[in-house]
Length: 253
Ligand code: NAP
Image (tube, rainbow, N blue to C red; front, top):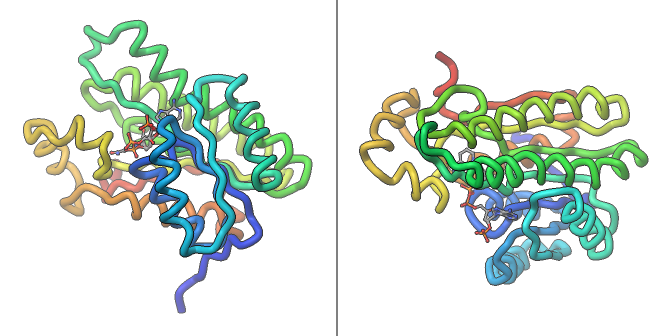
C-alpha cells in the first residue's frame, strides 16, 4: 500500500523555484495539496510555473527576489504571509555554483556563493521559523549537496557553503525540534538541471563523476522533489537534523 503524502492545508515557500530542482519541488508539493509561494529571480519563470501548477488546484503566489541576507528574507516572509497566510513549510533550494580551481577563486565568487547558498537560506529560516515555533508546527528542508559531505575538485566555495548549510541545519534542528519544527537537508549528487549541465555537461568532468555513482546515472529533479515532499509531511515527524544523501550511493564509500 503506497504511503500517500498529504500536504493539504499547508503553505509552502520554495526558493529558487523558477528552474530545475526548485520547480520540480513546487510541482510535487502542489500535487500533495500544499499551497505554494515561489521565490526566484526571473519573473517569467514564476509566471509559467503558475500555469503548470493550475491543474493541482492549489493557491499560488510568487515574488521576485535575490535572496542573500536578512532584509530580503523579511521582505519575502511578508509577501508570502500576505499572499497565502503564514507559511509552515520552507524549502531553501536557491543556490549558485560558480566553480573554479581553489587557486583561482575570487573574493567575489566566494562572497556571492556563501551569501546566496547559506546566508540567504539561514535568514529566511529565521524569518519564517519564528512563526512556525510560535504555532508549534513547521518543516524546513534545505537543499544541500553531496559537495557539502565530500570534497570535490573545483568546489571550494560551493562545498564550504553546503557544509555550512549542513551544520546550520543541525543547529536549527536541535533548537526548534522541541517546538514541533523539524529541520533537515537533502544532499543530491549531480541532478540534471540547467546548473548541472553548465558544469557536468563536459564529458571530461561528467564521465569520472558518473563512474563514482554506484547506480550508474545522474539524478532527476523529481527524485529530489519526492524526498522533499516526504520530509515536509507528517510521515517524517521523527526525522530531524538529518542530512539525507540522494546520490545513488556516491557517499556510501
Ligand atoms: P538551477 O537550475 O540553476 O536553478 C536555480 C534556481 O534558483 C533558479 O530558478 C534561479 O533563478 C534561482 N536562484 C539562484 N540564485 C538565487 C538568488 N540569489 N535568489 C533567488 N533565486 C535564486 O539550479 P538547480 O540545479 O535546480 O539547483 C537547485 C539547488 O540544488 C541549489 O541549491 C544547488 O546547489 C542544489 N544542488 C544541485 C545539484 C545539481 O546537480 N543540479 C546537485 C546538488 C545540489 P534564476 O535562474 O532566475 O537566476
